[in-house]
Length: 267
Length: 87
Image (cartoon, rainbow over all chains, first blue to last red):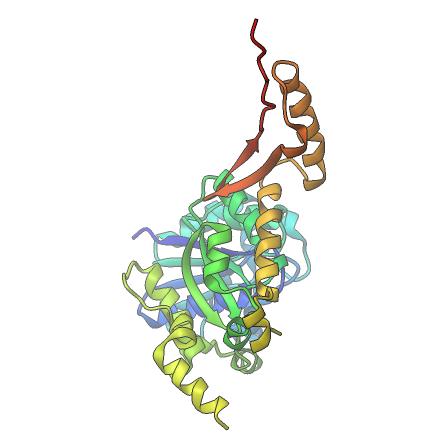
């Protein structure tokens, strides 16, 4: 087996990288694949808490790299999905504790027994980003429909191309359909036109993401959630499935969306 | 927020502003030329070209445009019409 390494990055902080990493990892595992998520944000560990695994940490990525434990010992098995693992970041060290070569070595080891390795990159364009990108076979960039996030996404897309890790694929997260419709938020089509990059996911702005993060249960595992479906669709596209619909777009401009809006405005 | 009357009057929405600002911003971010240097580039281009041919300075237009993920510099340089007198 030779697994695929997918790095989730963004440039700007706070756009939803960690949430996307946890949900894409969970959705891939839910499809039956063997998945390992790696938190590459050394010093600002967070993927553990979003995945709800913070109480099980014994060893971390830096312990593996520095030889204090075996790779297997740092892999925390998910509570719900048998084939989902997390390798947490160290909390007490900084980014210089891990090198791009370390990341390549760890991922090469993981590729042997897993289908997908999902790396949650730190924000910024320095060492942590270089570490996260080094082993990547595929790079997913998360942005929000907002000027500063789009600008930073553009920088990162350029850097991914320069590292010959392209073409990058884009997730537009936190789309507020009502704001888009009244002309107060960039539409997905505008963001895509500006960035000239392939789209892999559209995720609505949804308060339920905060609720699921509060509980440490990825929303992708909630079959009734539309946002969960958006993440599950990204996972399906990663596995090579064609013609997976873009949920967020349909409800904004589709027939049902318009009808429901007419009914609401009729009150 | 864009009201119905704004739409009728064709006022720009804040999303339109965001898109236009980003369009300009990104072409400059992708090159090493900051927006404030365009004026200097324009002046230098005009002076070089003017050494060879007479340029209609007031109507010279130079802009950066986006073509997918590559950029190009477009220069529209109108020339002065030379009135030739019969010799």
